Image (cartoon, rainbow, N blue to C red; front, side, top):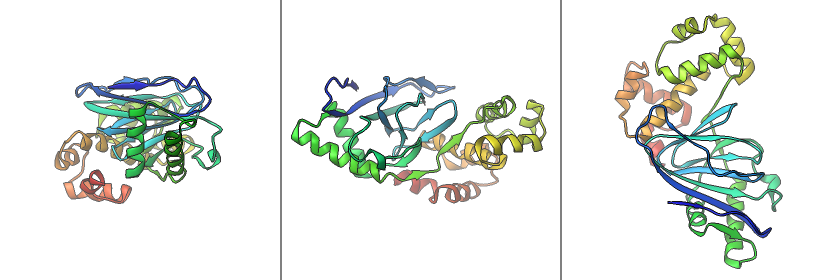
Length: 259
């Protein structure tokens, strides 16, 4: 299913896009560039599966009850594997209450109400403020967007050549120890620590734990069991992995995906 409506009228304040991809368990993940947004804000979510939103500066992993808020002007691409149902809202800039909307890209919680509003808007196609019932929907959507709560599911990406190489190797090598990655980059740990703190705001260890967490999220969403993921990521036991997951996201993996 695919749906995308252009905004020919100034009274159209919300557009939508919806498509379900059946891409198989591809490695690397399939990359998709959604319809051009121009200078509209965007809310990107998956009602099924897990997708990754990636820019040159950062990557965000989006489980089914989360979304990425993207202010107008950002270019990005989507990465997905398996069956992923992508649903997007395009919000016209300079609308009522815009100053209360998030100013930066972020993964945000999606309330059950907002999730249903997204699905409904995709069914309609575009919301016109000149139509009474659609104007009411627009108002509720905007009210929900104003109270979005950001969650720590982003992975800032360094731009320095040495640090960028380390990040790329870490993303493709799974549980390869940091010392081996440093040798492949020909850089000392002290230098790499300095580069990551300067360019991502995180220590090398913090960045690697976040990268491991997001990698695990994608695999958990694909149905893999905790024990297998924990072993491959270098944890001594499933309970050690669960403890890390709860420390980072406040819930066990089971409760997180049941939320």
